[in-house]
Length: 55
Image 1 (cartoon, rainbow, N blue to C red):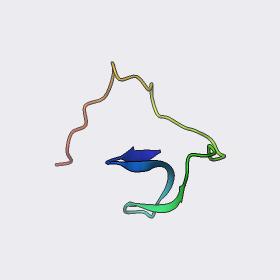
Image 2 (cartoon, rainbow, N blue to C red):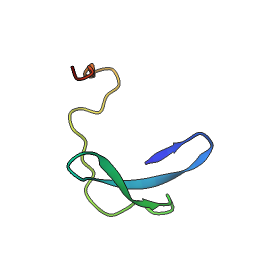
Image 3 (cartoon, rainbow, N blue to C red):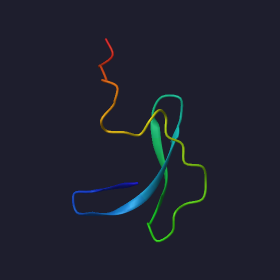
Image 4 (cartoon, rainbow, N blue to C red):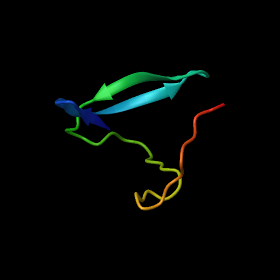
């Protein structure tokens, strides 16, 4: 889900084209989209992984 900057929240579907993620679909929040919700790791703000830039 994307929101912020005064914009209305929307569900957005992205696909990876081998190089980058491209937006394929955007839907309102009236209904939760069908599908499988998948989160990697434990979704907990008290733990995390430091992201380092590629060298």
